[in-house]
Length: 157
Image (cartoon, rainbow, N blue to C red; front, side):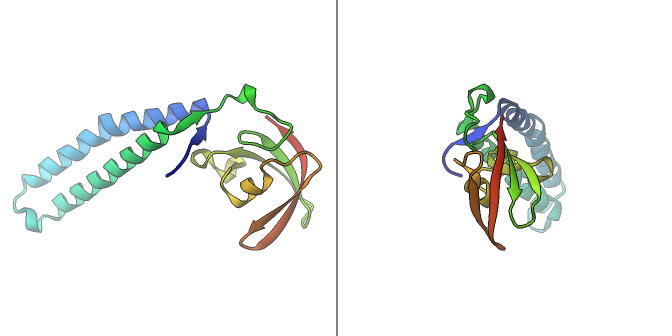
């Protein structure tokens, strides 16, 4: 994980809430599971203890990851976004020049990306290819399947 994580206020609050739940509910539950498994005897042959310790390790890794994301988060104010160019948090309507299909994407951080909702990551090939473009410009995006060409139709917030 490196650099700044650009997120909306809503996503930032959701991450903080998730971190709070992990620390206040899941962490004590993991400790309790380890204690219960420890009471069942020999730790060398105790699969329940091993599983509880592994679950605790995964939980701690998730907590550490979330703490890092929150620490490097920069909350973006949607009212200060310049919609003359494609940038993070803008919605961009593009036409795929090969298929003539029109699609609208919102460029978001990796943490917020969700293709079903039309939100693509700023670090994805299409996200990178669209960044900085203006209406009327054609973006050539290199993807595993080859080169896709998109015409920028509309940019909004």
